Image (cartoon, rainbow, N blue to C red; front, side, top):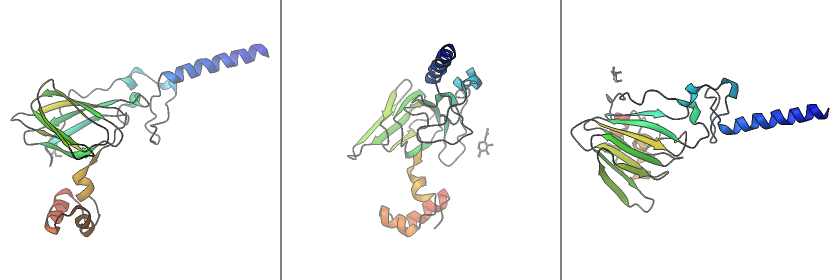
Length: 208
Ligand SMILES: *[C@@H]1O[C@H](CO)[C@@H](O)[C@H](O)[C@H]1NC(C)=O
């Protein structure tokens, strides 16, 4: 009996030691603020820790002429629980990643190619703005509104990493104009005029 108990304890210790190494996300299940539940260790393979595809340009044929390729925990389950993630930005000439926030992460941006004009606004409404070129890095503190736009005549590429496996993304213009919040309320809460609100709702696919 004592022997069996010791063995049981030993295996318990062992399995919990493994469990502490990582918690590869079971991305078919629900995601909570704490991330995904862990995939059983026996089913984890090296592929869970490798993401392929950030060498490929995103498709910038869209209204913002820019693309974000995320390697967040939903796409890259090995990140689950580790407090980090990464992605790629492609910004064509004239393109912009409009004002947005990542509610749960700070961001580090590293320019690989081209010229990127980037800025964020603090809660004191101070603007921190810089034009970045190859090899420059800028950080965007958690939750603050920020943007990046192509400030040159060639396509720009950057890698962005985040302090959360699922940083979240809220784009200001989409929040204001791409849903069914009534124009009257958008106008009342932003002080914008009716024509401007209706125009942006129509461009961004909002109603009301
Ligand atoms: C890029 O996106 C546009 C618009 O959705 C689409 O028409 C085009 O085929 C895409 N290009 C590639 C290479 O996927």
